Length: 520
Length: 111
Image (cartoon, rainbow over all chains, first blue to last red; front, side, top):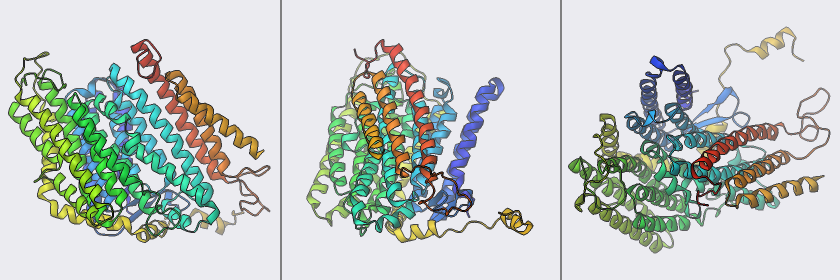
């Protein structure tokens, strides 16, 4: 077994626990919290990159926790798409941490520990091959996100957190109902095993299985911010501290990924019982996209505008997931990389611009007190990347998606919807940009100190990564294509997880007991 | 007994949902608590309801589900109880803070 697979879960867990102790010790020890958190995040990035190289070898890898054979114990599984998301998580985590180390982390207690636990939950949700374990990791990442959202609790944050927590607790209740229904029907919670068992379900249990499947889809749609369920997102993300919102950019992707994984494994094509369950998904995704574009047009503050951009990118991704063809999944994975990175960059940038305007992010004329050129350039790059305008990777992702959709029924709707929403987002961004940078206004608020080096580094690093997506579009596209192929190849996943052999014990207790005659 | 259990779960879930739809955070928290009770009972019931069956492999009894209770839903329900309890406590903390800041108990802070 390859022990590197479990590192993205264990490393942040240990670092988080250690950070709690350091903070408790106080004084000189507390000074070491920042370096430790940064080292842990950097190691996580290295580990994720290593896993990506391994996953690119082509085989699905699985890791048996506690050395129990697959359907009995909990298994982790790694394929190309998992590794890609692990890298994205580590990148955004590192950027968020760099940004927060400028001072945001000292505004409240336990910032660093919560951030590590958040990373652990996200990584675990990506890696796990067990439905109940997925629930547990969802709860870990949610619990950490509640803490991070409340960090430095202002009034709007507390209010947003209240809605967010209630909403997600209801989602958890639904998740549990769906899980236990599936267990009652199939007698297993291992995703690979479930894929096999659900295919052989007797006809009288079909309706129940479909109900459970739809409930699962609803739960993931809450996380992914699909149309009737996204209303919590703009308020929550706009209220969160910039570094936290930057990390939250990956949270909607957890929902998208879970839909992708469960969709291909359990509701996959050619699987009579559950096929067609995700048919409404692309339509809802399209509606999400259009409404988010309207929201972006109507937003009165930059942070809220950016939050709607996140919803729009989630809508685009869900169209791709729902269409479900190999080409559409390739486009989804390709677009996912760009959209996560650019969403993270946007939250950091929105905070910097608000800062340069004396702490005001409303789209009203005000003098930019610093960084006119730098922030203007960053705004331009980020706007081009998020709106899907050539030459950056956002455009390529959308073009791939449109190509994929063109070959499917109702092509006119997908193509039209995606193009119209892109235009609306472009208009919203152009309006915001001209308001923020070109309209003369008086200096408002107080003059705030310029950005710390870490904050500049985080923002420019993310923007450079966005540019790199465009420069290295060919290898990335190749990777996304192979990852999509792997997602659709259910048999390989099932074989890798269920066929994984436990390690032979160095010291076989049971054998020795048998030999001694202790065994009963 | 099955009917009684099903009705109990239904009533708990119904009351929970009704309370959740109210605009006061205290009611919403009570609703969530009731909902989590319903969910926990539901998970437990999904392991099939059996009388006089322990989830332990014993000597002389064939260890199939015909003779023993399914231990897995019981383990799942324990995990679910711990998580929902902890998160309800977190939610109570947040609601208290919101109450202190806004001076009322409405979920949107406007009363």
